Length: 499
Image (cartoon, rainbow, N blue to C red; front, side):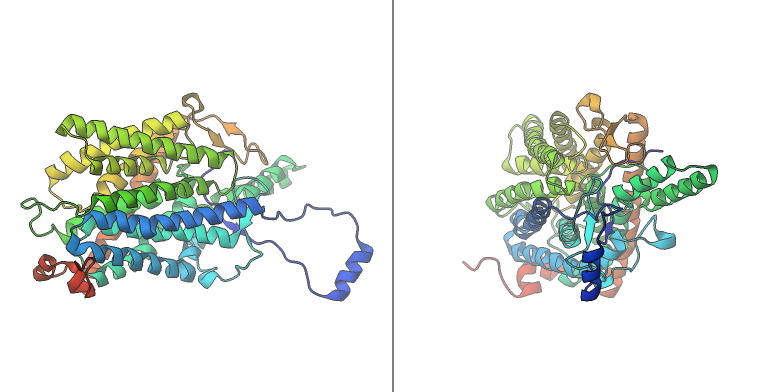
């Protein structure tokens, strides 16, 4: 049986030494060679690496995403976007500590295929000695480092959504929707895609099957192995690959943004009057910060400072550059001029597309993926958006949703070693070793498509329901007068600029 390497194993607890002095003295006098291996200890380098990457991902939200989005809106709404991103990130962080981490990364009992449980509410049972597994047998990192890294992901995802309905949505509605959406959409999707028992549990169970001495023992060991394999989210069990969040973050946010843009409706004057970005300088600064932070986003998802992290880093560099050039030439050919906004959009498209693929494809494959994603996203942000007439203010769906879909499906193809991909890892047939195994491109692409479709349906239907609930409770949209005046003054009593 094969179980493929995906992302983020479930945490494990490292036993701590007792504190009773008499027992310690007795142990010292009576010590004998250990019969079992000591519990793994976190490597300082891996720990530092993951903590730095967590900080880089947070840097993507603040100030990266805030400045990127802020520059794209009209000046009268600049401060409102900054406020929304800051508040959403802060709310998401607190929710993660209270119950988000538990729902995403603990066993969920009878609902384990879809969502976790409440074993770690308020981070119960977590301290400086607890550890989380990585992708290598016997290698762990401090659970606090893992929690911080994952928290940064949970913070940026709902912040991405606000760009789809910027310049017309109540601040209170944004906060209430964020709280509901994280609870009923993000945490379940994160669990379905990334939760699994971890490499050591699989390897131990596989060895027990291999060393069973009789039929009864073999039957029991096989059942135990199957139970370990079943201890995973639904999309993970399907074999879908998502290295750093193509489904969990980008498709999830993109589809939610599209649903919100349609339900809330178009901005006043959309399609009739010009609504250019008020500061492309600010947007370029924000996009540049996003690119730098994305190295932590993708390389950090390896959870270890190894060659796998270097591969993800390199892929993030080349896919982004490919995205810039892909959009540049597509726009140049279609409109006669290559714009800065287009090149920035191409960079984000390339980053989004390589996110699920970062640790699975080779540098050439990543570059190709970035170029293709940028061209497809350009088409959706121009022709498709115009044809359907929806007002996705900052092209959250056109770039994150569409780019995430292209990247997720492309991962299933470009993971092939014959195409320069890294192949897959089998913890059951090769316990204790990171051995690449053959890839069936047909079955892998089908697993990717299934993961994409479930994410689209889950977030699409769930978001629609939640938007309606929020509209009933607090109202989604500001009044026409407030929208014309600008949300900065009306919603916050301040201006971004006072000159």
